[in-house]
Image 1 (cartoon, rainbow, N blue to C red):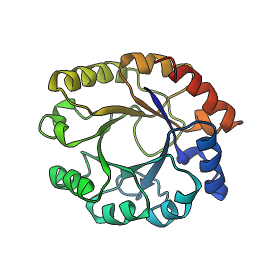
Image 2 (cartoon, rainbow, N blue to C red; image 1 turned 90 degrees about the vertical axis):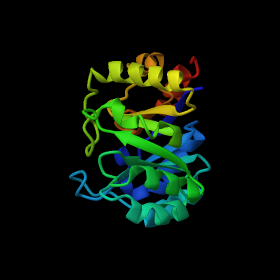
Image 3 (cartoon, one colour; image 1 turned 90 degrees about the horizontal axis):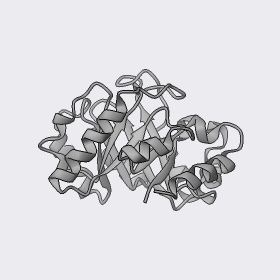
Image 4 (cartoon, rainbow, N blue to C red; image 1 turned 120 degrees about the vertical axis):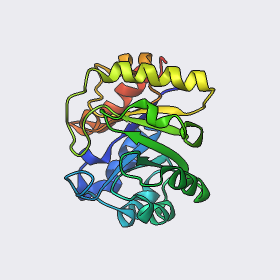
Length: 218
């Protein structure tokens, strides 16, 4: 089973609730929420108060991607706001093991995020603690970027690592996901595809259905 996670980074911020409802009703199983602090990445987006406000608009998995320094400071509030899955950056967490365990203690699934240049070997000791490994396939902080080609080899290597370890972790991809490359990404090993502009440009509902038609074949 492959899943689509529309990224609200590309949605209309003036009507986030309606956008969430629209893509959920069209078939999106996840909603991807990028929390940015202006320090770990250049942009600032939104935090727990906004997540709490839009939570009633969908029963989809709220997939919160913490692009923040010291994510531990925000985990309790984000979980209380309605997150189902909280993913934190290996590069931003001082005590990654502790933070991942804390996410589970809050009743959420835990994910770890790697930027394109971070080695998969950073997962050696914590892979068994995570439900999701989110690979950034662009450099984080901005929407509508081009997919980094070497990410395909990284996805395949991660899939092999997960299989060899007997892990149940899902592979999530974020960055440059389009209708014309999503089949290739699924074949490489991806389980969850984050798509921003490819979903919210023009007819979002139609775009979700087009993605689901392709993902349903895997």
